[in-house]
Image (cartoon, rainbow, N blue to C red; front, side):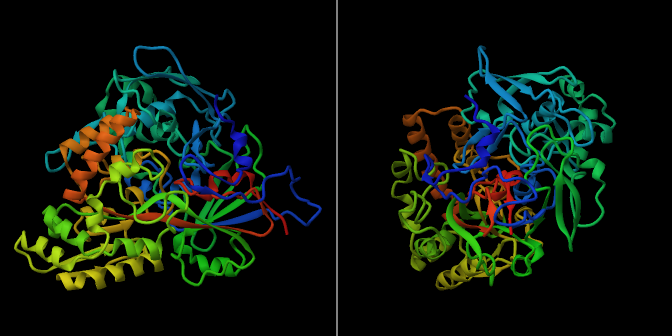
Length: 580
C-alpha cells in the first residue's frame, strides 16, 4: 500500500531497517497559521545547506553533486520522495504507481487529475517520457572528437536504462511503463521521484519541439538533440535575474528570486492542489552564503550541514541532532595522470590513516551499524551480507603503511608523486582530512596538495585539475545517499556521468547490472564480495566513513525532522512552522 504524503508530518525516533538513527523533533500538531498560544508564527524560515545551488535540474551531472535535491524536493516533487529511513515513500499528492500484470516488470503511473505547474500548464505523462529520454542513455550523438556520447548530460542511467517503453498519449495523465525482459529493477519505486520530473512543456517550447512524446517515440534525433541542449544547460542558476518562465514548479513551493544578498527565495505556489504550505516563504541559503554569519544574524532557523564542516557556527538556541548519514565520505580517484596505474592508487590508499580518520571525523562505532571505517562500496552496513562482503581485504588499508606504499610506487618506477585533492570549500573538516592525509603520506614519498575551493566541482577530476576528489556518495559535496546502494554502485559503472574518475571494468559493469535486479541474499553476497575484491585491487575510490550530519532546528520550529539522505532536512519543509 502506498504511504501517504502525510507521512511527512512526523517521524518517531528509532533505529530503522537501514540502521540509521532517526531523531524526532517537534511534530506538526495542526497549528493555525499566524497565531499560537505560545507566540506568533513567523512568515519566513531560513534554511542553510552545505552545498551550492547551481541548477534547477538535479538529474544532470552538475545537478547531482549540487544542493538541488535539498532545495527543490518540495518545488519539483515526484511519485515518491526519499524518507528519513532512506527509502522511497509514495507522494500521493502527485499521483500513484501500481504494478500491473505483464511478461516483464510493468508499472501504471497515474498523475493526480488536479496536478498542474505553477504556470498553469497541467502535468502530464510527457514529463515521465522526458525523464526517461534524458536518463536512459537511449539518445546519442557524435562529439567533436568523433566519439558517440549521450545527448543528455545525465548523472546516472540507473533504472531508466532498463525501461523498454512508455505508453503515453501526449498530454494524458497516465502512462504504462514497461521494463525490458528480465530487468525487474528492485529500486523501481525511486524512479520518477522528487526532482526527477522536469517540466517537459518548457523544454519542448524552448527547443521548438511541441510534442516531446512523439519525438521520443519516433526516435527523432534532430528534435531530441535540441531538447537535450536545453535540458543540459538552460536550467542553470546563478544569483541574479532569473527568467522565471523557465522554472515553473509542480510542488507546494515555487521560486520567487535568487540573489547573493537575499538567498534562494521559495514562496507558496498558489496553483498547488494539496495542503497549503504551513509557512508561506522559505529562504534557502547555499554554502556560499556564509552559514555562520547567517545563523548569527538570525536569518536561519534550519541548518543541515556535515558535522564539523562550518567553523564557528553557534547553534545555541537550536535543537541539534548529529546523525550518521547514508553518504559515505571517500576519495574518488582519477584513472589518468598520476593515478593512471592502479598501483599508484593502491600506494595512495596504503598511506592513508583510514581507521584514525573514521574515529576522528566519522561516526562513533556502534551507532546504528554505520560507525567506524566504511568497508564496502556496494553494501550498506546493516545488510546481512555486509561483514562477509567486506572480508579482510580492506583491513590492509586501515592504518598507514609507508613501506608498502613505497613498494607500490616502485611498481611504476615512480618513487615520488604529487596528489592534488579537491573539494568544495570552505570546509574545515575536509581541510583537516586533507592535512592528515598529507602528513601520513609524506613518509611514503607522496606529496599532497589541497586544491579545495568554493569553485571546485568533481568535473575538475576529468579536466585534469585534480587527482582526487574528497566528497560523499557519487561525489556529492553535501547531503547524499539513500538506503539502496543504486547511486553508489552506478557511480563506478563505466560510461555513467557520476563516475567522475572514469573508472572502467567490464566485470564491475556486469555486477552492477546484476545487482540492480537481483535481491537474492546468496547472489548479493557472491557478487558483492567479488566486486569488493576487484575494487580493493584497482582502487577507483577509497571509502573512509559514513558522513555524520549536523541537523539543527531553532527552538520554536515545529515539524522539523532530520533526514540524513540526499533529500536533507528540507524533505518536509512545507510542514515547517516557526513560532516566536
